Image (tube, rainbow, N blue to C red; front, side):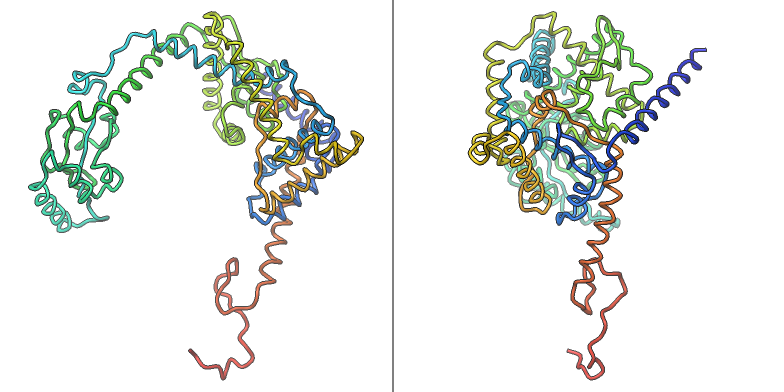
Length: 492
Protein backbone atom coordinates (compact mmCIF):
# COMPACT_ATOMS: atom_id res chain seq x y z
CA UNK A 1 0.00 0.00 0.00
CA UNK A 2 2.78 2.40 0.86
CA UNK A 3 4.63 1.71 -2.40
CA UNK A 4 1.47 2.30 -4.35
CA UNK A 5 0.91 5.65 -2.63
CA UNK A 6 4.41 6.79 -3.51
CA UNK A 7 3.87 5.77 -7.12
CA UNK A 8 0.61 7.74 -7.24
CA UNK A 9 2.36 10.78 -5.82
CA UNK A 10 5.14 10.46 -8.38
CA UNK A 11 2.64 10.28 -11.24
CA UNK A 12 0.78 13.26 -9.83
CA UNK A 13 4.00 15.26 -9.64
CA UNK A 14 4.96 14.43 -13.21
CA UNK A 15 1.47 15.34 -14.41
CA UNK A 16 1.63 18.70 -12.66
CA UNK A 17 5.10 19.35 -14.05
CA UNK A 18 3.88 18.55 -17.55
CA UNK A 19 0.91 20.87 -17.11
CA UNK A 20 3.22 23.68 -15.97
CA UNK A 21 5.40 23.17 -19.04
CA UNK A 22 2.35 23.15 -21.32
CA UNK A 23 1.01 26.29 -19.67
CA UNK A 24 4.31 28.07 -20.34
CA UNK A 25 4.38 26.88 -23.92
CA UNK A 26 0.83 28.11 -24.54
CA UNK A 27 0.96 31.40 -22.67
CA UNK A 28 4.54 32.64 -23.21
CA UNK A 29 5.45 34.71 -26.22
CA UNK A 30 6.93 32.23 -28.66
CA UNK A 31 9.66 34.70 -29.59
CA UNK A 32 10.71 35.69 -26.04
CA UNK A 33 13.29 33.85 -23.96
CA UNK A 34 13.66 36.16 -20.93
CA UNK A 35 12.01 39.14 -19.27
CA UNK A 36 13.42 41.79 -16.95
CA UNK A 37 10.45 43.82 -15.73
CA UNK A 38 9.03 45.24 -19.00
CA UNK A 39 12.16 44.48 -21.03
CA UNK A 40 12.20 41.38 -23.24
CA UNK A 41 15.03 39.31 -24.71
CA UNK A 42 13.84 37.78 -27.95
CA UNK A 43 14.75 34.34 -29.19
CA UNK A 44 16.18 35.93 -32.33
CA UNK A 45 18.35 38.35 -30.37
CA UNK A 46 19.83 35.67 -28.08
CA UNK A 47 20.27 33.29 -31.05
CA UNK A 48 22.24 35.97 -32.89
CA UNK A 49 24.41 36.70 -29.84
CA UNK A 50 25.20 33.01 -29.40
CA UNK A 51 25.25 31.75 -33.00
CA UNK A 52 27.24 34.63 -34.47
CA UNK A 53 29.67 35.02 -31.57
CA UNK A 54 33.27 35.20 -32.74
CA UNK A 55 34.34 33.60 -29.46
CA UNK A 56 33.18 30.20 -30.77
CA UNK A 57 31.60 29.36 -27.42
CA UNK A 58 29.55 26.12 -27.43
CA UNK A 59 25.92 26.41 -28.53
CA UNK A 60 24.24 24.58 -25.67
CA UNK A 61 21.24 25.08 -23.46
CA UNK A 62 23.56 25.82 -20.53
CA UNK A 63 25.41 28.52 -22.45
CA UNK A 64 22.15 30.05 -23.67
CA UNK A 65 20.93 30.16 -20.07
CA UNK A 66 24.13 31.83 -18.88
CA UNK A 67 23.89 34.56 -21.52
CA UNK A 68 20.19 35.05 -20.72
CA UNK A 69 21.04 35.39 -17.02
CA UNK A 70 23.73 37.92 -17.88
CA UNK A 71 21.25 39.94 -19.95
CA UNK A 72 18.65 39.80 -17.16
CA UNK A 73 21.08 40.98 -14.49
CA UNK A 74 22.36 43.83 -16.66
CA UNK A 75 18.86 44.98 -17.59
CA UNK A 76 17.70 44.96 -13.97
CA UNK A 77 20.71 47.07 -13.04
CA UNK A 78 19.90 49.39 -15.95
CA UNK A 79 16.29 49.82 -14.78
CA UNK A 80 17.39 50.57 -11.21
CA UNK A 81 19.97 53.11 -12.39
CA UNK A 82 17.54 54.81 -14.77
CA UNK A 83 14.86 55.14 -12.13
CA UNK A 84 17.25 56.37 -9.48
CA UNK A 85 16.52 53.39 -7.25
CA UNK A 86 19.45 53.54 -4.88
CA UNK A 87 18.92 49.99 -3.56
CA UNK A 88 19.88 50.98 -0.05
CA UNK A 89 16.80 49.65 1.78
CA UNK A 90 18.36 47.77 4.74
CA UNK A 91 15.54 45.19 4.74
CA UNK A 92 16.11 44.38 1.07
CA UNK A 93 19.87 44.16 1.58
CA UNK A 94 19.45 41.92 4.63
CA UNK A 95 17.07 39.68 2.70
CA UNK A 96 19.42 39.45 -0.27
CA UNK A 97 22.49 38.73 1.87
CA UNK A 98 20.71 36.16 3.99
CA UNK A 99 22.85 33.37 2.55
CA UNK A 100 26.03 35.25 3.45
CA UNK A 101 24.94 35.99 7.00
CA UNK A 102 23.74 32.39 7.50
CA UNK A 103 27.13 31.08 6.35
CA UNK A 104 28.97 33.52 8.63
CA UNK A 105 26.86 32.55 11.63
CA UNK A 106 27.18 28.83 10.90
CA UNK A 107 30.96 29.08 10.60
CA UNK A 108 31.15 31.05 13.86
CA UNK A 109 29.01 28.46 15.62
CA UNK A 110 31.11 25.56 14.32
CA UNK A 111 34.31 27.36 15.34
CA UNK A 112 32.88 27.53 18.85
CA UNK A 113 31.93 23.86 18.74
CA UNK A 114 35.36 22.89 17.46
CA UNK A 115 37.18 24.80 20.20
CA UNK A 116 35.03 23.14 22.86
CA UNK A 117 35.58 19.57 21.66
CA UNK A 118 38.18 17.54 23.48
CA UNK A 119 40.89 16.33 21.13
CA UNK A 120 44.57 15.49 21.07
CA UNK A 121 46.99 18.18 19.92
CA UNK A 122 50.15 17.74 17.88
CA UNK A 123 53.30 16.84 19.81
CA UNK A 124 56.58 15.00 19.38
CA UNK A 125 54.86 11.89 20.76
CA UNK A 126 52.07 11.95 18.15
CA UNK A 127 54.70 12.56 15.46
CA UNK A 128 56.88 9.64 16.54
CA UNK A 129 53.90 7.28 16.85
CA UNK A 130 52.34 8.52 13.56
CA UNK A 131 49.08 9.05 15.43
CA UNK A 132 46.08 8.98 13.12
CA UNK A 133 48.28 7.66 10.30
CA UNK A 134 49.84 11.10 9.74
CA UNK A 135 53.52 11.09 8.71
CA UNK A 136 56.16 13.34 7.14
CA UNK A 137 58.95 12.38 4.75
CA UNK A 138 61.47 13.49 2.15
CA UNK A 139 62.49 11.31 -0.76
CA UNK A 140 64.74 11.06 -3.79
CA UNK A 141 63.07 9.19 -6.64
CA UNK A 142 64.89 7.31 -9.38
CA UNK A 143 61.96 6.73 -11.70
CA UNK A 144 61.38 3.91 -14.17
CA UNK A 145 60.84 4.89 -17.80
CA UNK A 146 57.44 4.05 -19.24
CA UNK A 147 57.13 0.34 -20.07
CA UNK A 148 60.59 -0.31 -18.60
CA UNK A 149 62.28 -3.61 -19.38
CA UNK A 150 64.07 -5.57 -16.67
CA UNK A 151 67.36 -4.35 -18.09
CA UNK A 152 66.21 -0.75 -17.75
CA UNK A 153 65.02 -1.36 -14.19
CA UNK A 154 68.38 -2.85 -13.32
CA UNK A 155 70.11 0.20 -14.78
CA UNK A 156 67.94 2.53 -12.67
CA UNK A 157 68.70 0.46 -9.58
CA UNK A 158 72.42 0.56 -10.22
CA UNK A 159 72.36 4.36 -10.50
CA UNK A 160 70.23 4.64 -7.35
CA UNK A 161 72.69 2.46 -5.41
CA UNK A 162 75.58 4.66 -6.51
CA UNK A 163 73.79 7.85 -5.41
CA UNK A 164 72.64 6.22 -2.17
CA UNK A 165 76.28 5.80 -1.16
CA UNK A 166 76.74 9.56 -1.44
CA UNK A 167 73.58 10.70 0.38
CA UNK A 168 73.60 11.71 4.05
CA UNK A 169 70.97 13.30 6.25
CA UNK A 170 72.97 16.49 6.00
CA UNK A 171 73.09 16.73 2.19
CA UNK A 172 69.75 15.05 1.51
CA UNK A 173 67.95 18.21 0.35
CA UNK A 174 70.72 19.16 -2.07
CA UNK A 175 70.93 15.63 -3.48
CA UNK A 176 67.13 15.56 -3.96
CA UNK A 177 67.26 18.80 -5.93
CA UNK A 178 70.04 17.40 -8.09
CA UNK A 179 68.92 13.79 -8.67
CA UNK A 180 65.21 13.27 -7.88
CA UNK A 181 62.91 12.29 -10.73
CA UNK A 182 60.01 13.75 -8.72
CA UNK A 183 60.58 17.33 -9.89
CA UNK A 184 57.80 18.75 -7.70
CA UNK A 185 59.20 17.60 -4.37
CA UNK A 186 62.73 17.67 -5.71
CA UNK A 187 62.68 21.46 -5.94
CA UNK A 188 61.74 21.47 -2.24
CA UNK A 189 64.65 19.24 -1.29
CA UNK A 190 62.48 16.12 -1.58
CA UNK A 191 59.98 17.41 0.98
CA UNK A 192 56.55 15.73 0.73
CA UNK A 193 55.15 17.56 3.74
CA UNK A 194 52.68 15.87 6.09
CA UNK A 195 50.43 13.20 4.60
CA UNK A 196 48.13 10.37 5.57
CA UNK A 197 49.68 6.91 5.33
CA UNK A 198 46.87 5.76 3.02
CA UNK A 199 47.71 8.52 0.52
CA UNK A 200 50.98 6.85 -0.47
CA UNK A 201 51.59 3.52 -2.19
CA UNK A 202 52.08 0.72 0.34
CA UNK A 203 55.82 0.03 -0.13
CA UNK A 204 56.55 3.72 0.39
CA UNK A 205 54.30 4.26 3.42
CA UNK A 206 55.49 1.00 5.03
CA UNK A 207 59.08 2.16 4.65
CA UNK A 208 58.34 5.55 6.24
CA UNK A 209 56.56 3.84 9.15
CA UNK A 210 59.57 1.61 9.75
CA UNK A 211 61.93 4.57 10.15
CA UNK A 212 62.54 6.45 13.36
CA UNK A 213 62.55 10.29 13.13
CA UNK A 214 65.91 11.35 11.68
CA UNK A 215 66.59 8.00 9.96
CA UNK A 216 67.18 7.40 6.25
CA UNK A 217 66.19 4.28 4.33
CA UNK A 218 68.04 2.10 1.88
CA UNK A 219 66.55 1.70 -1.60
CA UNK A 220 62.77 1.21 -1.52
CA UNK A 221 61.15 -0.09 -4.69
CA UNK A 222 57.64 0.95 -5.70
CA UNK A 223 55.73 1.01 -8.97
CA UNK A 224 57.28 4.43 -9.66
CA UNK A 225 60.90 3.45 -9.23
CA UNK A 226 63.46 3.40 -6.42
CA UNK A 227 63.20 5.77 -3.47
CA UNK A 228 65.67 6.94 -0.87
CA UNK A 229 63.51 8.08 2.04
CA UNK A 230 64.34 10.36 4.95
CA UNK A 231 61.96 10.67 7.87
CA UNK A 232 62.72 14.15 9.29
CA UNK A 233 63.01 14.85 12.98
CA UNK A 234 59.99 16.41 14.66
CA UNK A 235 61.84 19.72 14.95
CA UNK A 236 62.43 19.79 11.18
CA UNK A 237 58.85 18.82 10.28
CA UNK A 238 57.04 20.59 13.14
CA UNK A 239 55.47 23.55 11.31
CA UNK A 240 53.77 21.55 8.55
CA UNK A 241 53.05 18.53 10.71
CA UNK A 242 51.42 20.45 13.56
CA UNK A 243 49.17 22.44 11.22
CA UNK A 244 48.05 19.32 9.32
CA UNK A 245 47.61 17.24 12.47
CA UNK A 246 45.50 19.82 14.27
CA UNK A 247 43.36 20.39 11.18
CA UNK A 248 42.85 16.66 10.63
CA UNK A 249 42.01 15.93 14.26
CA UNK A 250 39.68 18.96 14.30
CA UNK A 251 37.84 17.72 11.22
CA UNK A 252 37.50 14.27 12.77
CA UNK A 253 36.10 15.72 16.00
CA UNK A 254 33.65 17.89 14.02
CA UNK A 255 32.56 14.85 11.98
CA UNK A 256 31.77 12.94 15.14
CA UNK A 257 29.78 15.92 16.44
CA UNK A 258 27.88 16.32 13.16
CA UNK A 259 27.07 12.59 13.04
CA UNK A 260 25.54 12.88 16.49
CA UNK A 261 23.55 15.94 15.38
CA UNK A 262 22.26 14.01 12.34
CA UNK A 263 21.09 11.17 14.53
CA UNK A 264 19.30 13.47 16.97
CA UNK A 265 17.69 15.60 14.23
CA UNK A 266 15.84 12.68 12.61
CA UNK A 267 16.07 14.17 9.13
CA UNK A 268 13.49 12.94 6.62
CA UNK A 269 13.86 13.77 2.91
CA UNK A 270 10.59 14.06 0.96
CA UNK A 271 10.13 11.46 -1.77
CA UNK A 272 9.77 14.17 -4.44
CA UNK A 273 12.81 16.17 -3.26
CA UNK A 274 15.15 15.11 -6.07
CA UNK A 275 12.59 15.83 -8.79
CA UNK A 276 11.65 19.17 -7.20
CA UNK A 277 15.28 20.28 -6.95
CA UNK A 278 16.05 19.25 -10.53
CA UNK A 279 13.06 21.24 -11.74
CA UNK A 280 14.12 24.30 -9.71
CA UNK A 281 17.71 24.02 -10.96
CA UNK A 282 16.53 25.09 -14.41
CA UNK A 283 16.12 28.60 -12.97
CA UNK A 284 16.95 28.90 -9.26
CA UNK A 285 16.22 32.63 -9.21
CA UNK A 286 12.50 31.93 -9.59
CA UNK A 287 12.39 29.81 -6.43
CA UNK A 288 13.96 32.00 -3.73
CA UNK A 289 10.64 32.47 -1.98
CA UNK A 290 9.19 28.98 -2.47
CA UNK A 291 7.82 27.46 0.72
CA UNK A 292 7.53 23.91 -0.61
CA UNK A 293 9.14 21.53 1.90
CA UNK A 294 12.03 19.36 0.72
CA UNK A 295 12.94 17.82 4.08
CA UNK A 296 11.85 17.83 7.69
CA UNK A 297 13.80 17.51 10.91
CA UNK A 298 13.13 17.79 14.60
CA UNK A 299 11.65 21.25 15.22
CA UNK A 300 12.03 22.45 11.63
CA UNK A 301 12.04 21.92 7.87
CA UNK A 302 14.01 22.83 4.75
CA UNK A 303 12.00 24.74 2.17
CA UNK A 304 12.90 25.17 -1.48
CA UNK A 305 13.52 28.86 -0.87
CA UNK A 306 16.03 28.15 1.89
CA UNK A 307 17.66 25.47 -0.24
CA UNK A 308 18.14 27.98 -3.07
CA UNK A 309 19.69 30.52 -0.68
CA UNK A 310 22.31 27.99 0.39
CA UNK A 311 23.04 26.95 -3.20
CA UNK A 312 23.53 30.57 -4.22
CA UNK A 313 26.45 30.74 -1.79
CA UNK A 314 28.26 27.93 -3.64
CA UNK A 315 29.93 29.41 -6.73
CA UNK A 316 29.82 28.79 -9.55
CA UNK A 317 26.05 28.43 -9.20
CA UNK A 318 25.56 27.68 -12.90
CA UNK A 319 27.87 24.68 -12.63
CA UNK A 320 26.05 23.41 -9.53
CA UNK A 321 22.72 23.71 -11.33
CA UNK A 322 24.11 21.70 -14.24
CA UNK A 323 25.51 19.01 -11.94
CA UNK A 324 22.15 18.71 -10.18
CA UNK A 325 20.41 18.21 -13.51
CA UNK A 326 22.90 15.52 -14.57
CA UNK A 327 23.16 13.66 -11.24
CA UNK A 328 21.29 10.57 -10.14
CA UNK A 329 18.37 11.16 -7.79
CA UNK A 330 20.24 9.44 -4.95
CA UNK A 331 23.09 11.98 -5.25
CA UNK A 332 20.65 14.91 -5.31
CA UNK A 333 18.94 13.55 -2.21
CA UNK A 334 22.30 13.39 -0.42
CA UNK A 335 22.92 17.00 -1.42
CA UNK A 336 19.51 17.96 0.00
CA UNK A 337 20.43 16.13 3.19
CA UNK A 338 23.69 18.08 3.53
CA UNK A 339 21.83 21.38 3.10
CA UNK A 340 19.25 20.22 5.65
CA UNK A 341 22.13 19.60 8.06
CA UNK A 342 23.12 23.25 7.61
CA UNK A 343 19.60 24.26 8.64
CA UNK A 344 19.77 21.99 11.69
CA UNK A 345 23.10 23.47 12.75
CA UNK A 346 21.82 26.98 12.11
CA UNK A 347 18.94 26.29 14.50
CA UNK A 348 21.52 25.32 17.09
CA UNK A 349 23.38 28.54 16.35
CA UNK A 350 20.12 30.43 17.00
CA UNK A 351 19.70 28.64 20.31
CA UNK A 352 23.29 29.47 21.21
CA UNK A 353 22.67 33.15 20.45
CA UNK A 354 25.16 33.31 17.59
CA UNK A 355 24.42 36.49 15.66
CA UNK A 356 26.30 39.11 13.71
CA UNK A 357 27.26 42.19 15.65
CA UNK A 358 25.61 45.52 14.67
CA UNK A 359 29.01 46.61 13.36
CA UNK A 360 29.27 43.54 11.12
CA UNK A 361 25.76 44.09 9.80
CA UNK A 362 26.51 47.72 8.99
CA UNK A 363 29.77 46.74 7.34
CA UNK A 364 27.97 44.17 5.18
CA UNK A 365 25.37 46.73 4.12
CA UNK A 366 28.09 49.28 3.35
CA UNK A 367 30.03 46.78 1.26
CA UNK A 368 26.86 45.93 -0.65
CA UNK A 369 26.16 49.58 -1.48
CA UNK A 370 29.75 50.17 -2.57
CA UNK A 371 29.65 47.07 -4.74
CA UNK A 372 26.46 48.28 -6.43
CA UNK A 373 27.98 51.66 -7.26
CA UNK A 374 31.10 49.97 -8.63
CA UNK A 375 28.97 47.58 -10.70
CA UNK A 376 26.99 50.43 -12.26
CA UNK A 377 30.24 52.17 -13.14
CA UNK A 378 31.77 49.05 -14.72
CA UNK A 379 28.69 48.52 -16.89
CA UNK A 380 28.45 52.16 -17.98
CA UNK A 381 25.17 52.57 -16.09
CA UNK A 382 26.15 55.17 -13.53
CA UNK A 383 22.87 56.87 -12.47
CA UNK A 384 24.40 60.35 -12.61
CA UNK A 385 25.70 59.75 -16.13
CA UNK A 386 22.24 58.62 -17.25
CA UNK A 387 20.62 61.68 -15.67
CA UNK A 388 23.06 63.97 -17.44
CA UNK A 389 22.28 62.37 -20.81
CA UNK A 390 18.49 61.94 -20.58
CA UNK A 391 15.85 63.95 -18.72
CA UNK A 392 12.82 61.67 -18.28
CA UNK A 393 12.75 58.22 -16.72
CA UNK A 394 11.58 56.51 -19.96
CA UNK A 395 14.42 58.18 -21.85
CA UNK A 396 16.94 57.09 -19.25
CA UNK A 397 15.57 53.53 -19.29
CA UNK A 398 15.92 53.35 -23.06
CA UNK A 399 19.43 54.77 -22.94
CA UNK A 400 20.45 52.31 -20.21
CA UNK A 401 18.87 49.37 -22.09
CA UNK A 402 20.72 50.35 -25.27
CA UNK A 403 24.00 50.49 -23.36
CA UNK A 404 23.35 46.98 -22.06
CA UNK A 405 22.70 45.65 -25.55
CA UNK A 406 25.86 47.33 -26.83
CA UNK A 407 27.87 45.85 -23.99
CA UNK A 408 26.56 42.35 -24.72
CA UNK A 409 27.49 42.75 -28.39
CA UNK A 410 31.04 43.64 -27.35
CA UNK A 411 31.23 40.79 -24.83
CA UNK A 412 30.07 38.19 -27.35
CA UNK A 413 32.51 39.47 -29.97
CA UNK A 414 35.42 39.35 -27.55
CA UNK A 415 35.81 43.14 -27.36
CA UNK A 416 34.79 43.40 -23.70
CA UNK A 417 35.00 41.29 -20.58
CA UNK A 418 31.81 39.83 -19.16
CA UNK A 419 31.05 41.21 -15.69
CA UNK A 420 29.15 38.85 -13.43
CA UNK A 421 26.36 40.27 -11.29
CA UNK A 422 27.01 39.03 -7.72
CA UNK A 423 24.26 36.84 -6.27
CA UNK A 424 23.31 39.30 -3.46
CA UNK A 425 22.89 42.12 -6.01
CA UNK A 426 20.85 39.87 -8.29
CA UNK A 427 18.70 38.85 -5.30
CA UNK A 428 17.88 42.46 -4.38
CA UNK A 429 17.00 43.28 -7.98
CA UNK A 430 14.69 40.29 -8.33
CA UNK A 431 12.96 41.30 -5.10
CA UNK A 432 12.36 44.76 -6.55
CA UNK A 433 11.49 43.84 -10.14
CA UNK A 434 9.96 40.92 -12.01
CA UNK A 435 12.07 38.46 -14.00
CA UNK A 436 11.27 35.35 -15.99
CA UNK A 437 13.20 32.90 -18.14
CA UNK A 438 11.17 30.93 -20.67
CA UNK A 439 12.54 27.39 -20.65
CA UNK A 440 10.94 26.56 -23.99
CA UNK A 441 12.56 29.70 -25.40
CA UNK A 442 16.02 28.39 -24.49
CA UNK A 443 15.37 25.27 -26.56
CA UNK A 444 14.37 27.40 -29.55
CA UNK A 445 17.49 29.53 -29.10
CA UNK A 446 19.76 26.47 -29.22
CA UNK A 447 18.03 25.20 -32.35
CA UNK A 448 18.28 28.54 -34.21
CA UNK A 449 21.77 29.43 -32.93
CA UNK A 450 23.10 26.03 -34.03
CA UNK A 451 21.94 26.75 -37.59
CA UNK A 452 23.49 30.21 -37.50
CA UNK A 453 26.79 28.79 -36.22
CA UNK A 454 26.83 26.10 -38.92
CA UNK A 455 26.09 28.70 -41.60
CA UNK A 456 28.80 31.02 -40.28
CA UNK A 457 31.33 28.18 -40.22
CA UNK A 458 30.51 27.25 -43.79
CA UNK A 459 30.85 30.86 -44.94
CA UNK A 460 34.19 31.16 -43.14
CA UNK A 461 35.56 28.07 -44.85
CA UNK A 462 34.26 29.16 -48.24
CA UNK A 463 35.97 32.53 -47.92
CA UNK A 464 39.38 31.05 -47.21
CA UNK A 465 41.88 31.14 -50.13
CA UNK A 466 42.61 27.98 -52.05
CA UNK A 467 45.66 26.13 -50.80
CA UNK A 468 47.40 22.83 -51.33
CA UNK A 469 47.86 22.70 -47.54
CA UNK A 470 44.64 21.62 -45.74
CA UNK A 471 43.22 24.53 -43.75
CA UNK A 472 41.71 24.25 -40.28
CA UNK A 473 38.17 22.90 -40.62
CA UNK A 474 38.69 21.64 -44.18
CA UNK A 475 37.74 18.05 -44.94
CA UNK A 476 40.63 15.66 -44.59
CA UNK A 477 41.92 14.29 -47.87
CA UNK A 478 40.67 17.22 -49.95
CA UNK A 479 43.02 19.49 -51.89
CA UNK A 480 42.64 22.82 -53.56
CA UNK A 481 42.46 22.95 -57.36
CA UNK A 482 45.94 23.01 -58.94
CA UNK A 483 47.11 26.13 -60.75
CA UNK A 484 46.56 26.32 -64.51
CA UNK A 485 50.24 25.75 -65.23
CA UNK A 486 50.56 22.82 -62.86
CA UNK A 487 51.93 20.55 -65.54
CA UNK A 488 54.94 22.79 -66.14
CA UNK A 489 55.44 23.91 -62.56
CA UNK A 490 58.76 22.84 -61.03
CA UNK A 491 58.93 21.05 -57.72
CA UNK A 492 60.99 23.05 -55.21
